[in-house]
Image 1 (cartoon, rainbow over the protein chains, first blue to last red):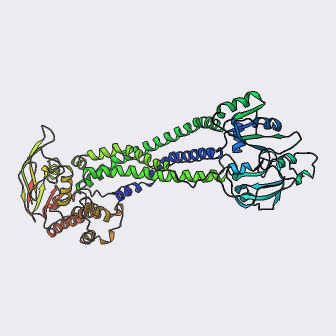
Image 2: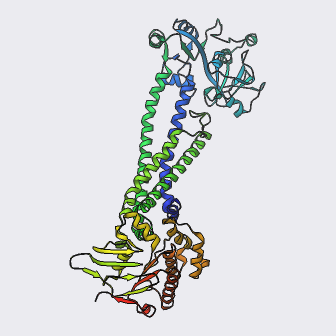
Length: 404
Length: 209
């Protein structure tokens, strides 16, 4: 029966291909949306795990979150170290991790921090160990792979977050460790002590300082006027979620932003766009369904005779009904398969062309349960589109048809 | 065998006709002659289980066929009655062999070597995999006969099987129908207005008089 319907379909290859392609296009959009949404939410939640609050310079709270957790946007500015230390002494705070941003190497961000940052993401070393002195760095897995850097290799950082403006040619960074692939934001970062970021921007450098060990936890000790970019904060108890942001925002020149809150807001903003694209995909799918309906309906006129002949050689009404229905279902099933394939192909292209952007770390190499739903929906479209033609085939009067 | 009793049929009030009772047994051959519009095709459709009569009974092999319901009748027709039409009406997407096998498939009777034998009897053993549109009219009609015979029917009905064929093919088709129905020990009913057929079959009835 399947074979019979299939033979009838490939007897009209262009029509069949067009219908499959149209449906596949609509479903491919859905596939990409599902894949991106799933991985985006996944990534967003994973990267923000363990961070309850981010404190930084005044500005857009979303920007603060994006720049200091996900390392995609530009920082809002710098904050005074002393003020940061004062705020972090609040009894509601369990732990703070300072961040110093502003430099990059070949587009990968150099992040000045302490070793708690490694612990936050439970990063394991693939080779080497953590930094001990200024200008020693640990590379995220992707960075090492992409730039082909090994332990003891050296490089010079450049000023700026993305594209470099000028090189900091006084100081040379040295690789002391490479991390395992963690599948989170840390894969794309170059980590070093906070001191490295400070010293590299100093006009006159004191060679003595460069030999001292850096702070492994908390803030580095210094008697100079220093700045940091942001603080990642862990709460001591749930009450902090209510009190701390208000305390920071009102009483200091600092700003506090909650990742959970800002990410929800971001999803809401993106939701409008996603809904729009989904709407477009639904329209395409409906048109594809109509296309299949019209193709079956039109071909039915010329095929009524064929169907009558099939009846005279023993086919029942039910078999004829099934024959037409199967054509619709085969079409949409193939459309779904092709659509999912195109969706994944598109993801591969998207991932390959965006290694450092917001979707870095995405993969086309996953199959979600939702994709089975796509096949299910497609088959429903096929059944709906072929129901009326199949019903007409069911009701065809053989004798009347044959004597025409 | 084929029996009919008191068959009456009307499309509308002004166009009624009745059919003389028939009683045919295996091996019989019958020619139904008549002008177009005389109800020959309608009668053939009634005999073939395609069109229920207004009144009366058609009994094939002891089964009153119009007492069968839906799919039962379709299957009974597929198994016991082979019908050949004026035009071959082969299914274009399928090959010659697939067209014939389809008849086996619908009644759930998968016998592949019978197809080869049929094709050989029709002198078309090399055309099994040919597309139907590559066949000549005469060849296509022969394939449609093979399809009608695929399930070894007890009753073979042919509706103007020669009307669109030239003399040579018409003769070939009539002979084929006769030879094959004798081989199957089936009864053969041909409806036609084609004078060429008359000489081949002695037993006539004339409709519309």
